[in-house]
Length: 216
Length: 99
Image (cartoon, rainbow over all chains, first blue to last red; front, top):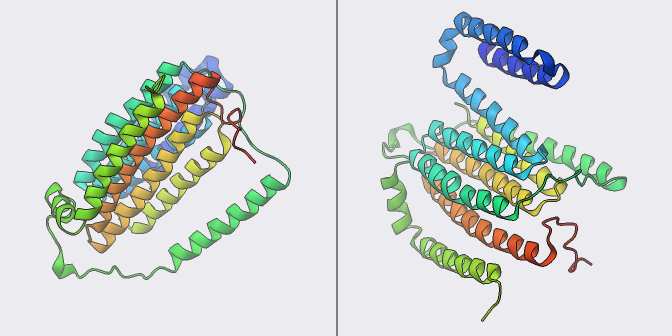
């Protein structure tokens, strides 16, 4: 816990230093690097714990998601979204879903994000000015509803049944593998699988028709 | 690892994506925020699948990824068509069908 909080504090101090005293970034960075090494030397057992790595990945995921929303340049947003997708892939690995982690990297980071990068570069977008923040009753209503929803979510998570629903004797060693998912996909979810293929063909035809210059 | 950590993480990511959809003007960034929200939901599915040791959650993540790919392709085609017509990707400018 000490190491995780220390690293987060070091990153925060470095970001503040870069914003407020940009001329002294290098000495501040060197000092903070020494602090980081000292932290690792002080608490190196924590490097082997799953909680430390989950917390670190979670911190990177939240920060990259915030930067996707905040950054005015769409190209930078795309790059931080790719970082966020990699963090989610690591979470899948922690949750014992190896196949999902692999297809997360191949499909999301490999295919969908290439599409986004391609379109951003094709349209040659400039950084936009300002966000749509709304105002007056809209904003106060949003705050009230947001707080109510957060309270509801907190209540739901707190009052969940404590015990997991599975029996430890029936543990399946093939959990999360491509073999297990394939078995489910081609037996119980066969119809949904075929419907997904029709959806993909429809989306492909739709994309071609929409992006065509003249329909003939 | 407790499942609550992953639920909290997914809720935070979903909220950030939702705020992004409401706040940004650029249609491409709005599509990216939708991808963020879909990923948060995928994380919830995987967390519950791990807790219940049932692989049905993984199959649902698979289908969500399929829908996300289709949505990205069609959405970006619409953005390109809009850009060709109006020379902009600002959603405030595309208000013809607004009531």
